[in-house]
Length: 100
Image (tube, rainbow, N blue to C red; front, side, top):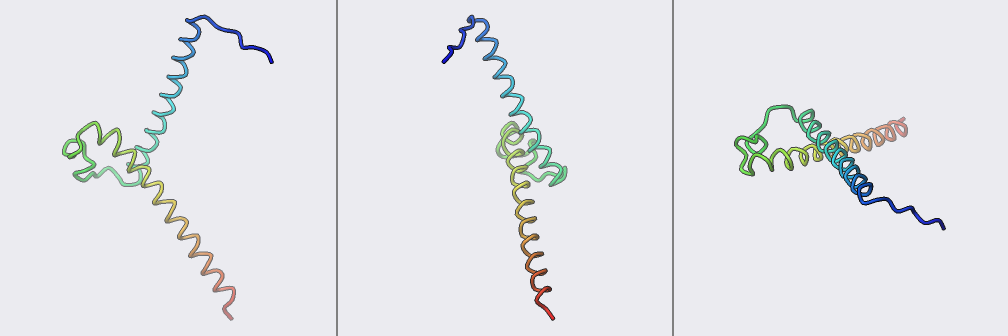
């Protein structure tokens, strides 16, 4: 088995920083997608818990945690609704196929 060539300290630091930036970009992309999905799903009208100006959780926790969490809940709810509609549609088609 060939051994990996050891790079200099500067090369390892640069590679570590690059990997950290890639991870940060991936995290920012996921956070942005979930937040945008929340606003697309629920609209821009915010109630007291989702408005950062009057939220009891505070400004930054509302934006960084609550909005993406609500976006994830919107995705899960939409998936559940689609699954239920699919099952009901299949049941109705099956009943219609057996009906005289």
